[in-house]
Image (cartoon, rainbow, N blue to C red; front, side, top):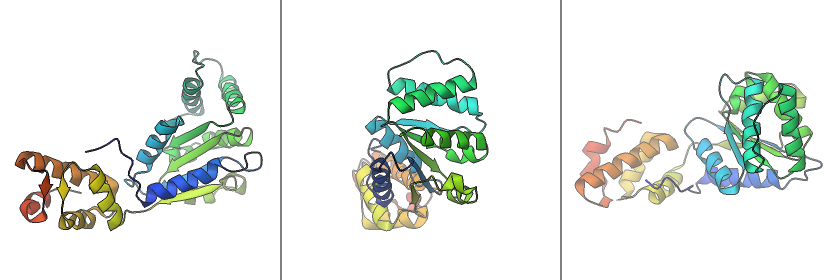
Length: 242
């Protein structure tokens, strides 16, 4: 499977468009905060990680039991790395907070992807800290979370949710998305019946689609064929669990 590729399915196109709008905002007037959300398995993490890696952005994953200090230490380490200012992370929580804010204020083009941002709603102090950073700098924070993240945000006081400049929802993949994804990442050429079968069994979930691609490649390798049709592999592919 060609795992290095970020295929431009509709979710990726929409996310790229929303990110472009967020980055091109009038920074002195509009806060740099965006929320990218959707059900599990739709490619949010892959998009965030690949986009951050390819553009030199910060990518970090919020852990479920993270304290504010844990969050600050992790973020400072990431920021030190991209600004080539690696130093031992020490000091009080307030001192680490100040170091981060100093970096953000001196580097206005910094963009931070925060995956699993749902966990910030379990610790409101982390969410408040992110709010402080976007309020007091021109940096951009991209929050990536599950489908309920937007609902959780909208249920909070207005001074939280009115700072979000853009929302982007990741939807289930369409048949055209599945066709494009399989054609571009699968090492084996498949027929239309296989593509339609994968779509029908995956419910448009990228994670399940990738399971089918991996299974098809194994079948192709075992049969020593680089092209497969549904009739010759239906007894095997129907055993793949979504």
